Length: 265
Image (spheres, rainbow, N blue to C red):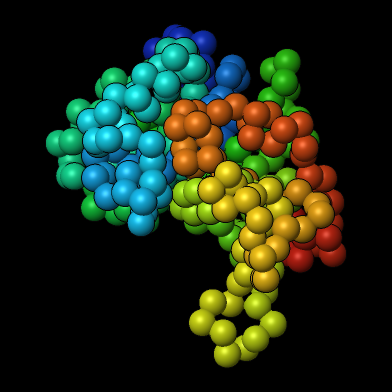
């Protein structure tokens, strides 16, 4: 299989990225040197998101929410850091999105969410995102060397069998979309063939708002294959990978028997 690599130098600054393009060009492999942060579902300018019937965010107004999340972002992220935003960045149109992005420090990579579809890649990059993807694979580096940790990045949590073939060997999926529902979960097939939803989200690490799920979503013993990076369960700020995983890294599948699909190198 042919593999090509593009090395991008961001104006001579410390952050850099090597992008590996596999046969499926919709799922690039991204490797960064330096600190890498993750966040999702900021929903800047979304009035309803603070209401109790939605996510019940602890703000009196959308302006207060925007200011708090921008402040928390910049308090953690340095200008040369990299931030993966896993989708659903903002509401209210292009102009409001363009007003927020330049205020946020770091090299910003957007993995599109279901609420980002109305804005083109070109407009996002002109606003300040340095990459816009639908999905990607993130390879962890330590001491300038690629490690054995790989993570599938996509907005909506998915069962491992639904990941693209190039993601078959990833340790876990980093996602958003579920807001405050849970921190970690594993999606398992619904045994009822007539069920409306074919997958259960089997919660493994509950959230504070829904601490004890029951029935099909009752907690499992092992860590979840999907890790929610959404601000609603991450103190409304970007987090480092080790903070979200609490030092708990699932083993990486080594064969098609373990992962359900063949691993492409």
